[in-house]
Length: 410
Length: 226
Image 1 (tube, chains in turn purple, cyan):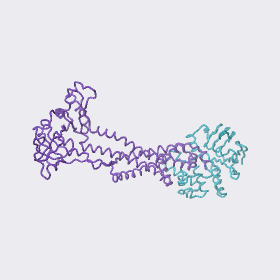
Image 2 (spheres, one colour):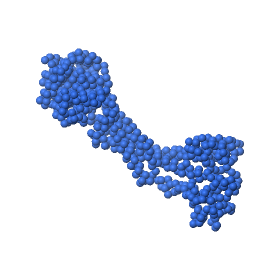
Image 3 (cartoon, one colour):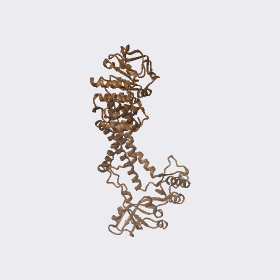
Image 4 (cartoon, chains in turn orange, brown):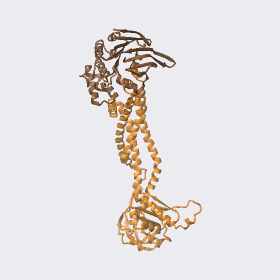
């Protein structure tokens, strides 16, 4: 008997035992649906993390940070190193072929005044690559330009949060404010940046509000006016393409190692950070998996149970089949295929139910979800695997029945 | 000689008790013979039928079918012999209830392997025609009378053109008139050259055969020829 005939026979047998088939299928439908739901929730969480990083500057970005010596005493080379400097940033821009943007940052909290109003505000010294590297559009005016950096210009780009506090209804562009008593011209206002994590009660908190409260001046102006050296608080660079990220990491490492003489820095891509975050979430994924696994297992036990019952009901039939020439393998295949037909159709219904569950979770619980073809494939494969695993034992039992005993069975 | 048994025994172990169902049976059946194996229940005739039908193997002794020593065979090989050499006719027909007669009769050909669906169907229809059921092809067993079911069961036994037709109480579940019709059909098949073995306790049925073998207490007690 070939496979196609076995499948046909399995389907016919299922159709002729509708009640039994429905009960068997329910278990698999629920199991498959929960796998779909669980994987979609997990994928949704991952995707949200990716979106968050994307909003923060995309996956092409590479972050360079100072690292601290892990030994008790600094070596001479470590002591001699100036750490990350603005000159490092310029060297990277000159020497790394894979680099697209270079965004050095120096942050200071400074006193900003306009007329009678005075605030302590966070100022970032940076350059024209900042909005590009960090994916930040401009609402009014313009950002810091290369010319501003060359000329040590006293210009400031303001975050949107303080704009109304300082200027109210007035036009902001072209106004002069003072920073530590030094006059600066307002050349632009950033667009408001927002990101809310869905679910888990934190949906009203804008996790990117700190962007909106930051202001920007040319990094050269920052170094000349407000700092004693050109040491950076942060250096973010981006690659010309996603594929070029590994090359850029290597190039940046080489340039910095040559300049510092010691590895007192760390070069890390955004995708490494995402991976770390996903690893942290793995624990929750285990719980999700356990739920899905239990549902599928219960479905499998139901199948095994009902198939064993159906074998008892069909002992005579098995005896007759063997008497007219069925081998143990023929009988085994017949029962295994029947289990597979049941679980595969249950799996198909389960996919539909799972998609429904996912849509409902998305709408009613406001949880992030994402369904991919891969998820559907995995869920379906799980249901078929359950069919094989739990169909195996009853099928082996049926195959091993002694024909004489089976024919005698009433 | 089509069938030859040499000192065949069958011993069942039921817990600590040994049951000797056959105590050394030696006999032979020629091709084309019409034989009845008789005996009361518990005599061992069912055990002998199971061994002759290759459903079971002897504990000791040898059994040759068509020149092959089948007492040496097991599992797959034995299934193949059952499929190609033996046609079973059961007392209670044992048709598959959920499929029509053509599918029922074609089933041994499915297990035979290597015959496509259309050919299997053609052979099944021709076997059903030969037992007078050409007009019932699409019916399911529960839509047929007892006699028709037994005819279908004979058609299924014939479809692989086996060497032996092995009929176990073929009239046991039928009324007298229908039983006579079924016996007439078996007589016809025998007359056409088929080797037919009847297993029965009914002397009226056994009377159709040209030779009787009586089993008592696990051994051949008497043999007779008509």
